[in-house]
Every structure is written in structure tokens, then in C-alpha cells.
Length: 365
Ligand code: GDP
Image (tube, rainbow, N blue to C red):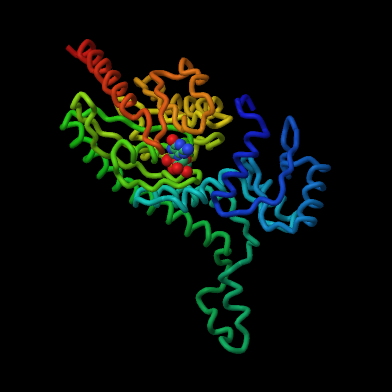
């Protein structure tokens, strides 16, 4: 709607996401509609175009860049000869591939279950009744004794299973979260400033985190390599010790519900003293990506925290002097990959931390 992203850029990103998930993109189709059709998302003409394109390309999967309602998804699958998913399902799939810690794995499964629940399409066969009745000669009618009657439909059984899994997952996540808050209190007791690395997906957060901490966090040229926070200790040039924590990558059109599902991961951002935002300054959508990061930080009520901006991937920029650093707070051009500008970045972090501490002294006498 009022997004800063153009349709073209958003679709390009969707293509990159599909690639990350392991799909080969064979074609794209766009529609300009003020209001998507309630039943099929696409208007009649565009739906026919899609049906024709699908026949011509013989593709297995169609991904919509917007969220589809369960009804739209079902109707589209009926009309098409391919599986239909939306951006949210694709992102969840990538999350599932990249989750590494126990907490991340649990959170992804919870989000997937919650996504699936309203989308279960039941033939609504009366499962338990059929189980007995169709057994015929081998089992006889006797096999059905006790399970005949109105019974539960397959759909009801599936729903019940998913609901009980959802409550199991919630309990497990609650346990992990309790564990985390204990760790966080221990860290607070050490009185070390905590810096959370935030930024758009693929901006180079893991690479910078590695370069700063020499930790071995997986970095891939894929969207969402980072899903779980990892915290490491580093010493700044002024001998100040700080804790740096890597966080999940942000992305546009991440539904608020999904953000909520990753709340525990994002708590690191909310609890941090200072944010280190990584911007891929070589990306043609650097400004839109930064806008999305700011929107999500605002939703988390973390946008006002002191911030240092690492303008990353300067090695890919033709003329680094052209970079407008005034657009970003405390901006430092760096190359995490080539380890350039890191001293300058650490000095800036030390300065902002010192300023932040002065401020805290003033507020709390
Ligand atoms: P994250 O999703 O923000 O954690 O991003 P990653 O750290 O996984 O990096 C995404 C991709 O960008 C990887 O292929 C990195 O090698 C690459 N990358 C990161 N920093 C730099 C840099 O300074 N210069 C260049 N050229 N590539 C970089």
C-alpha cells in the first residue's frame, strides 16, 4: 500500500527469496489492481493469463508476493495445476532451512503451524466411520465396533493435532525464554554494554559480526542465513568490553504476526543498549531496505536507541566518496569481507557508548 518499495523491486526480491529456498524461477507475472479479488486474488483476465502461463511453462509452484487468504489460496490451487503459496510461506520455508538453535527451530515450527491451521483444506470425510465401513472382508464390520458413529472428520483430527502441537511448542519456547532471561540477567550483572547487530537480510550482518568477533557464524550468500541470535564478547580500542549480539535479518512485508512469532529473537534488539545497523550500501535498494529496518525497529519501539551505522560492502561501490553518510546516524563505511574500516567502526562504537553512558549518568543520579 504505502510501501516505499516498487512492485518491480519487490518482485525481484521475491525471485531472490525463491532462489534461496532452492527454486528455479521460470517466469513472473504482475497485476495492477487497487483491490485484490476476494475469491481468487487475481482478476478474471489475469487469472486466465496465469493459467495459460502455467500450462506453457509447466511449473510446479506459483508464489504470490502478497499474503493470500486461505480461501484465495484454495481457489487458486483449484484453478491451476500447480501448488500455490504466498510470500509468508516462502519466508517460513527459508526460516526452517536456516534455523540453527533450539529456540529458532521451535519458533519456526510454531509459526508454520499457526500459518497452516486456518489453511487446512478438508475433504471433510468422516474418517473414523469410513475406517470401519470400508474394511470389507478382511476386517469385517466387527473391526469398526466402538469407532462407528458420527465420529471425527479427518479435518477435525488434523486440526486437533496441530492445536496440541502448538501448545506443546509454546510451552517449550517459554522454557527456552526463561533460560534466556537468566542469561541476560547474568550479562547485566557484568554491566557490559550490549550491542545488537540489526539490518536488512543479506546486508552482511554475520560477516561483520565474524570480522568483529572472529566467531564462526555461518555466512552464506543467501537471504536469511542468520536466524538465531548469538552473543560474543569483544574489546574496543579504548579497552571497553562489550557484548555484541547477532540477530535475525529484517525483510519487507514480514507480516506482523510473524514478527510476533520471532519476538524472543527480537528481544535481543529490544534489550540492547546500542544498535549497530548494517546497510548494504552497494545495493540498489539500500534506501528502501533501511526504511524497512526503521519501520520494524519502530514496531519494536527500539528506533530511538543510540545507533551506529556500518555502511557495508564499500568494496563494491565504484566511488566511495559519493556515499551520502548524512542519511544514517554515526555512519562508517566498511567492508566486512575485506576487513576495511573496522577500526574506525570500533572507535565510533566506543564514542557512542561513552556518550550513552554519560546520558545514563544524568538520568539516573
Ligand atoms: P546477513 O544476512 O546480513 O547476515 O549477511 P551475510 O553476512 O550472510 O552476508 C551476505 C553476503 O554478502 C555473503 O555472500 C557475504 O560474503 C557478502 N558480504 C558481506 N559483507 C561483504 C562486504 O563487505 N563486501 C562484499 N563484497 N560482500 C560482502
